[in-house]
Length: 285
Image: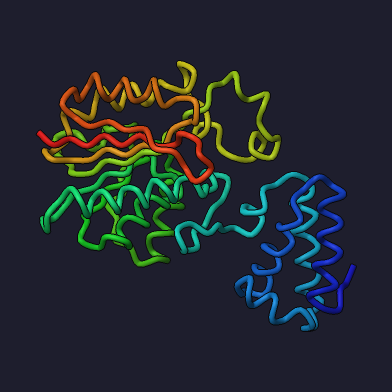
């Protein structure tokens, strides 16, 4: 199946994806990848003739996505906080909600701390999206990023090299690689989906994204409880903890951190869709 130009290929792909129950916007993402350009670049070149190789690759990736593989894995990348991150099946695909955790943290750092050198840890870094974004938005930060997965750390290291971000990557479970040190900022987007919620989830997610980065015991709360127990020994004063949460977990997770940091200001913040999605714990004394 060979298409003469970009517009013709996009028209076919959009219809084909809709017929197969997929979002037609994936056609544009694949075309951007094929042409090595942006959305605007695709729009400017709709009449351009595709080579046979480009046409064949486009069809192959569209069919791959139609068969259930997330389009981000098909093209090998995803946009996060205005930058392109490599992704594969070793890591979760970065979500727009997580950008709000970065945005909220950058804002709070500016308000809470003077011009002192700060140390930040990103626990369960996955693709490295949070750690790398924080380093590039706040270059004065010394950033440590941990993960339990060797494969995930390898992907994160590739992203750090491509984006020229100096990150200290460490292998280990939760705070284990950080013991004996003190931090000014700790961030985490841990697995938080209860195993019982799997039946409500998309097959695309279940069949392709790493379950170790999706699901957690104790109705998805176990890692928040463990972090609340472990972090008091690691935090400077003042300091900041920021977490992404499931939209129904705000009350329980806030309680964990209020119990562990009784003098802290613990707030549940909503995302752009109005759902409780972040916990911030500001430790002042």
